[in-house]
Length: 267
Image 1 (cartoon, rainbow, N blue to C red):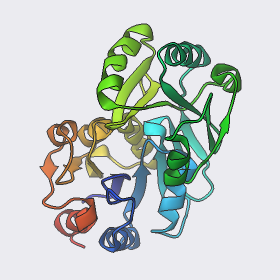
Image 2: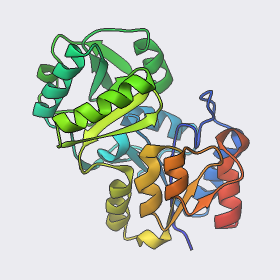
Image 3: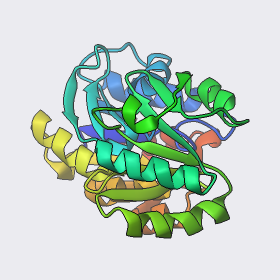
């Protein structure tokens, strides 16, 4: 019997256009009512995940948010912090300098807002899509004295893929992974959704064998491998499909959560 389901947000729960299919909402409500712990997992910030979760379930503190690809784990209602692991300030400084030298657009995060040293055509759409606010700062590292849960480079995939190799050589204390083709996420080296899920399950006293994880992208791969049952949606990228034990017949827009609830929870 599975007691916990951890689900990615974008392109797993939400359709590619950002909408929430009613079949996915209904499936998670049904699982919640059956006593299954719901964990929303994303590269997004706490506040952004919370806004989506609140449109699905009544927010309570026995549901959980894994945010920033695992850098933070909080309770769903009050966002009580259970664990955190940030990109160190020294790394923020190195990566910000590299981004500036190479003309790359970089975002850092503090509290419920994201920071950037200048605005591009991607800034406002990102804020609107993630339901967050932003601030332009003169110096990223100075504005993030405690480091950042993640850094985000936004741009052309082929260009970012080249810089990913160079940044990995520049700083071995960070990990770089694509959440979308144009989003290169940078987190502390040991941070991923899988390790966050393992820690959370242990805190809740739920054997990892009794957990299910659902995802679609490279940044979901560790979570799919860590869970008792790893599931990739039908249109998942190669990394997620290879990490999963099951690939669904449906994707987010066609109600992937309904298929999960029916096949693996009897709902």
